[in-house]
Length: 158
Image (cartoon, rainbow, N blue to C red; front, side):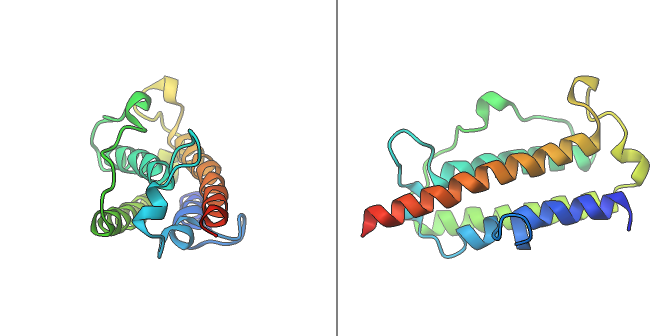
């Protein structure tokens, strides 16, 4: 199997359908989660909604580069989202998240092997492969936070 397929599979593992590494994924954790739980806070920690939107922000931004666009995302803006105020808003966000993640994975899978080693936007950002791997690792990091927040919030509700 080629490298593009393998890295796409790793990305899908954390976001859409995997259980090999963390025994869960974003879709498993977020599907069926109420918007009230998603926006609930534990002290000063980010909410499940904010963490999910944060990961989606990067997926959407990098996806645009994969499609030939420019890199328009900034770290300073990556936690700045309007509050989710209804189940409909939450469900709409999740549907967009899953669609963008599936498209992102498809773009990776179709990426020629030689592109994986090409500079991503600017040399300071490394190559495409490095950026995709960082996206995967970053996603696992926040997935762990989401799992812990759900446990803490479910204990609080009892």
